[in-house]
Length: 339
Image (cartoon, rainbow, N blue to C red):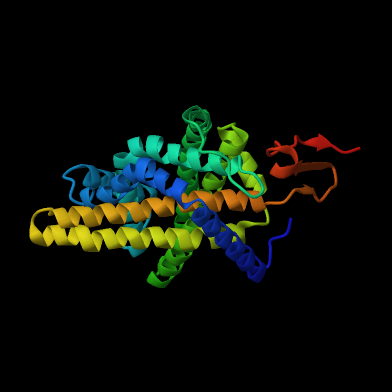
């Protein structure tokens, strides 16, 4: 399948975003109850971790020093500003992930399971009743399995990029290309490559979670199906992920400015700052729920597709039947040999 034209991809992304927002507003009471009861603890843990991790006494410096030693042993130039910034951001991300992992494995996944269960069992014009606790728990297990494999996928993506950068830097150094301009160009190229690989990995992770919820089967198979399903739709997926992630980053910055900064200057956390922090965490939770709706709508917009390889020896297809006609989604077709 060929990649859509950028203008067509932007149009598709805009349509999906509008439909997602319409769905959220149409069922505002249900989605906001999920935000208040389930997603809020996860959002609060993410925002609080952004404030606690930099001031932690041992965790962040330990991870930073370990990564710095790894970069030095790999032969990356110590004077490169790119690796210095990358090391700092990776250290913060790992430290924050360790702090929030209990909330991620519980509140976040249960929130996603509730949203997917609700959207997956809707009727053409109206939505069904709220999903029961047992139905949500039945989706939680596949989501948990997929989330664990998603973690390995993110680690593999980072390891792949670092391996390529290691080969590139040592190859150029071996041939005597170690000028500052060359290192700057290679660092900039590495930053672009790292951003593209990580963005695609995160998109596949989000789509695999939706697949796990709709098909009730988690693990690595959901990731493989997501990789096949996203073929030719990468530009659309990136266009959908960009505004949501920018909004999440803006709320994190707002929390740092309005709560963490004010608390630092005042020397204590007042009741007004606590209420403002709770409101900001609520807004973060709204975006978490909306992001799940967007991922579901993107998954639903993927039409049946099939392809054959260049030699015409094999063909494989992925088919998702319309929910209105058969009550659910189909499974991935197996590879079959052509005569």
